[in-house]
Image (cartoon, rainbow, N blue to C red):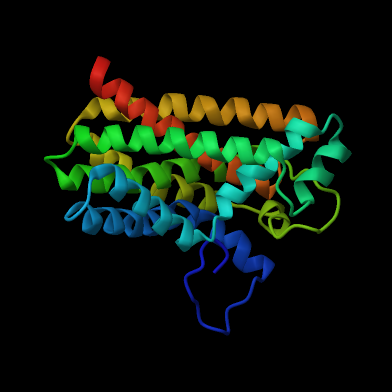
Length: 249
């Protein structure tokens, strides 16, 4: 209910206790979103070109999440691009309007994601099960990288103006273990066919580390937008890493 637009029973609410427990399932949402995206891609690929099918897969994933993470990425681009103090950055990110930095960032993000995923699909064109695992692992690993920030950093905003704050209050070993379990299983399955693919975790978590450090430096922690931006950037880094490993290692 919190992470996607998929309908849930009406008796379920955004209770802080539910949100804390939901943390462990954030990478599992990647399984769902990745599967829906792959299904749209696979059906489209039966009749259309790989490039068109990839775009339709993107659309399916965005409709599923309501552009939840893309919106966060755009807000981070605007906030850190136009703000020079913590207060200014947070104020810009809270603004619902998209600015030049956000628009440019989204265009470049989508272009890069489209190009990388199109090349990856052509690379695995004779193995649909590998493409399926690629879709799922990209979404689960990138979400693991994003949600892991709440285990190591503090929430930045001083007020309760964001839905992400309840998630930041409490987490136990169950949330940490659950996140890593759901985040890594698809990648491990993909690595069974080519063990070197597991090396993609290194650049993904290096990216996560530097993003978290950058957020810490400027705003003293993270916000929900920062988590969304981390997910999007780490997803792109994952695709890039897979291509590099497959071609050169």
